[in-house]
Length: 472
Image (tube, rainbow, N blue to C red; front, side, top):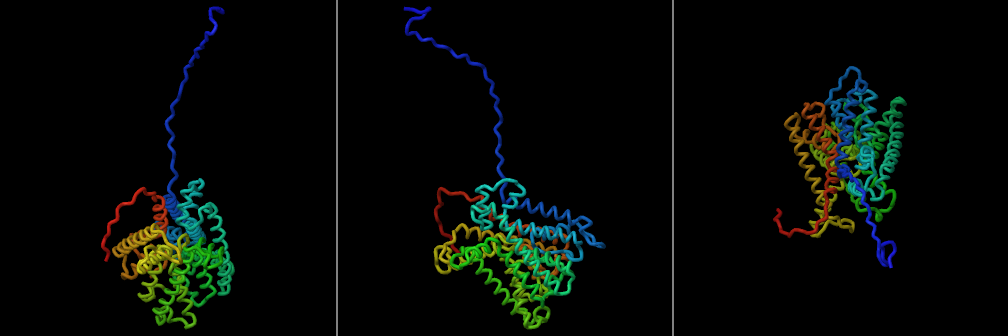
């Protein structure tokens, strides 16, 4: 039986008509990798130096009857951004109030940006959220907890504001009690509070005297010393102490930093007191009751800040060597202080003590320090020594002065301390450029090196065979 030419059971297959389609092949989009935090940090601080140089070159920044050359503006801007305090001109007399505001702003931004590590630079310059990799890098440089990096800027800002406002009020009252007029006393209070907290060492006293006119005034020395300690300790350590309120509950890093800081300050104060007690140009010219406070203040400020209540150029050579050791070590990681950092020095010291005791690993307070941290600390210390050697050699070839003076200026620049024996303003132009470069490298070198090493860390699938090498 058929139906219109078809039989039962037949299937009718319909062939689909294929319509021609056009496809457009687009080139593969390149995914732009975000810049490395350490590179962003260097570019960000270099941009701050450039902006500060341009602002200080404006005629409104220079006092009448004085001239500011590009090298002077560059050196001052670098010193301010790197919170060093080395100067080639008298800050009080050479710059106008506008210039003082520019210097203070550079100090504040430089110190605040360094405390927050690469987080602030990423937020301001890159304009993106920090990823896990960035958080790990910032955690390695600032000590912040992994989940709190994005709020680090806010907490550091509160910490900075509270410290600087309290210091400004105390210092303004102290200056007012010294007979300084109220507007000037208030401005001096703000300027020196910001400079002290950021461990910068800039002052408005004039004639390169630093704080020597206030050597007999504890109302000035004590607040400045406390601000230096707070800024040089850093938010992470201070926050851990305030939050846990118990020695046994503190983190290992906090314990090590606090103990090392106290030991260094006490050692420095005792050494300066011994070497300068009878020096008629320093402590010997003061009443006996004032000498301990000034020795302690010198140990605090010459370790990281660069202020001085004693004429640094008149210190005995033994005192200068002690100060150089303190400047090279510096303050805590993630703080406004410079140097290789107390953390780095302490890790190496713990490793030496553990090795001397025959222990297989570095241990402190019942905790073991990873070998990777020891390798990084050793890298930072040895590279800093190499940079210091090159800077000292360059200054010896370009500048005058004794070997101790040249070495002191080199350590002060690399450690971003700002203390000076008085030869920096007299340096030739190549020497000033070398010191400016030393301040920049000394300020960013340690942090960027740690960030770069952390970024390059890769898991290994195998370990090479072990072979011994003779030592000693």
